[in-house]
Length: 365
Image 1 (cartoon, rainbow, N blue to C red):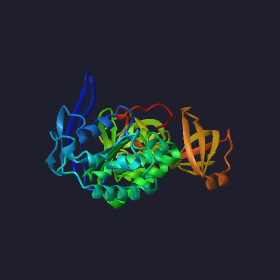
Image 2: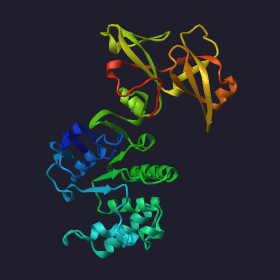
Image 3: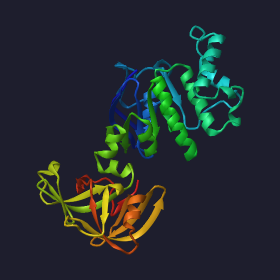
Image 4: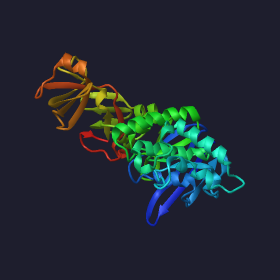
């Protein structure tokens, strides 16, 4: 079942939670709503589920307006961050609960319930824990039980609100890979809320990036990371370096570097900010005849397969972060205090008026 959100608005008193949000989830896709706390993600998910009413706009399921449908009639499965399992019920009974409370004419037989629950337990790899109770399970196991319970009622749409937010990093990583494999097997149209950039980029087919109640960008994980549409998206999806300069008639000048900026063809000598990821910066000891920015190595830190080098711009004094492979670092053997030259390989320029939350030097997500 496809989902379409059309111009949804929602306020709570003087606070505007959602500002004319619109997007589509094609049938069978897994879409992430990604953004910082307070960006409207959970409110939007609750409106899709029917747990919250929009002040304006509509939600369509498979092309039909579902705005006035009850939660039950929307045929959605909902998975919460904190599991919401019944502590006094076994794993089996927790999963069977949604089937047992159906109206008599829609309720499956006991044999059907037994068969469906055991099939789900096998699907979520917990068939050996059917008789246990939630307090006897790990956090990751509880979340898989919560997902099986949501799937038991055979929903047309699966909604997950920060499903792995209460788990430690290692378990979270394992479960999101498991969720991706499960989705590839079942192909249920799914929307999940997260503030974890890595989680969204690893699990989702497409990502809806939200900020202050609006949508900043929609695209595949590769599109939003490699081609951020706004300064906010650059900031939110990982570390980014900022370089200040100016734009004039479609050309941007950042220090000694000049690049084409055709989207700013009408600009007349206005302030600009260049954005570049730490791994998109080349560091050399010599200028090599190309335009480059002079800097001083201030700190070197080895993290796994990467070497993070912090530099100080000689002209600006700004902090610049560079990420090198360990092999490249071993080849160059840079030293703290050394004077070097940096050349951005993938510099994206925004007019300073379009800047969202940018500061001096390195901006961290």
